[in-house]
Image (cartoon, rainbow, N blue to C red; front, side):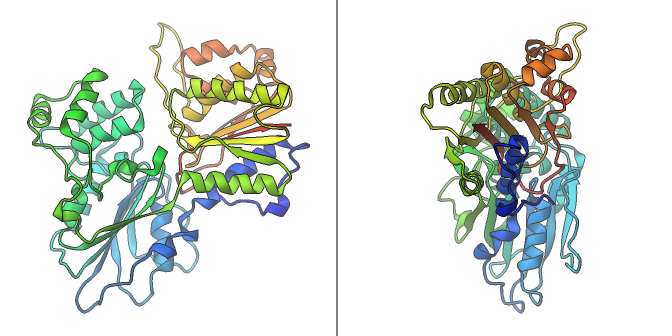
Length: 448
């Protein structure tokens, strides 16, 4: 599990800018780990003579959330359940911590059979629940993929194809999850409906702009305000084919989700235990403690990753050259969830590799044009940028020059979405391994 450095050990940003930025990232990640914040939101266990406690959940932070719950839940209070997380994202078990919650792994970002079987098992566990029972639902980003159960008339292969096309389309997370909720038997509040009449307490780590619980992991236990008509419009907008039976279900409203005010949510509560803004604030506080003023632009930035990178680059150049709108030295921080539209590959062109953070860094490097005294790091807080083994990448004043010295031009790598190949060749990837949490994009620009 990733750990932060004590503030007293922060690198000197003037002498070690890259190390300083990496430490800010690690501090942001540490703030989002569930053990530090979950305890304040746990309900009282039910009377074991009357009810039981069932734990279910899904997401990239599922493993660490389950372990945090096991550590915090009273030892004499019965508890059992099943949580699904991404392959390779189960943290090492702390010595002496008894396992009471089963953990299984499944695929992200495209769902697989393991995720479908996990969803089927979780639904089966909800059968026979009573009003005296308590369900603790642990939800984090990535749950849309690792917890998958296709709607009637749709196969897993159909779901995989639609999901991949959505990922490649450039659709933003709200659009993607609107579709996912209506093409599922567990998302969009349907899991809460399956738990009725039990009381449900949802504990959530946010990975979406605005911290909308209806979007995080496609909101399996919260009301859904989106509609079948909206889902169908999104599918048509991005020219994504669906089986005729599913289209008919969307057109008729047969695949509609439980809405706000539905009786299935009576007595339910949902809590955000970690958010992107909290992580950005932790990084900002650390920078200020090191004598560097910090400015948080927003935790809700969306848009094409490369274009967001260009905007950040223009801002950093203004600070470096004119001291506007911020005085230097300073750190500029931002979060959110950008998107990458996959460009068609030309015949004979090698396949590109990389994710949102790397694509942002390519756009940023191009906009900075070798600007002196500007360093940057963009990384995904789950430790995995897309489907690669890196969390993100660094940009330095000599990024373009070092790449060109190795015969690498930025434009061709952007054309084929190959951030991994570009930054790997010059030793500028950040590799952390899975962090066991997920509050989405982290970006830090240091201007000296």
